[in-house]
Image 1 (cartoon, rainbow, N blue to C red):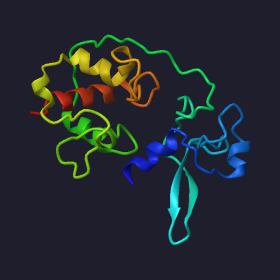
Image 2: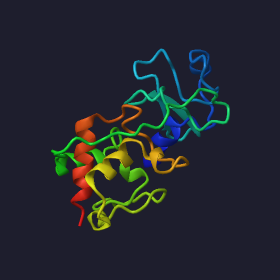
Image 3: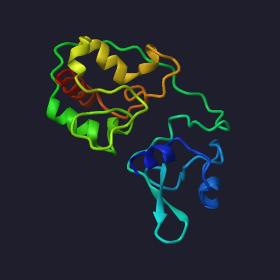
Image 4: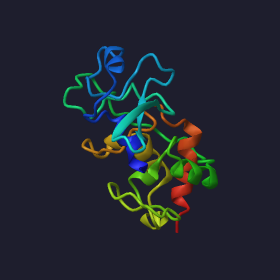
Length: 180
């Protein structure tokens, strides 16, 4: 169930209500978008014992992202290189909360992290991350927009797409850099 929100947000070819498709000009027909909703992005909810999905408003607006739909012809934001202004001043405990929260970082959807019983397997394991010896600036850039290092990555550009603010990014870096 954890990845269900992620799948809805990237606009997989799921049957959407006709009104949602009509209300989202410029988006592919399989995008989980309803411009009449405050957050615009929709997420599916299984209707028990029916074999149907019900579309609910998501926790955040992801309409500025391009979807993974082959029908999506919108331009993606260009990768952004950033410079971390030292000191880091991040809080590892807040960073852990962000990494684990579905409505925020949701790092656990793709990565293995301590204390998560259902680790993701799409991204690298983040266990013992501190041992990698990466600088805070390198980790900050990776989270801000990993496309700087790997143009083919599927990791969301959290900073470029304004999904996390600067302090939240700093908190995530502090959390990762403290994983022994």
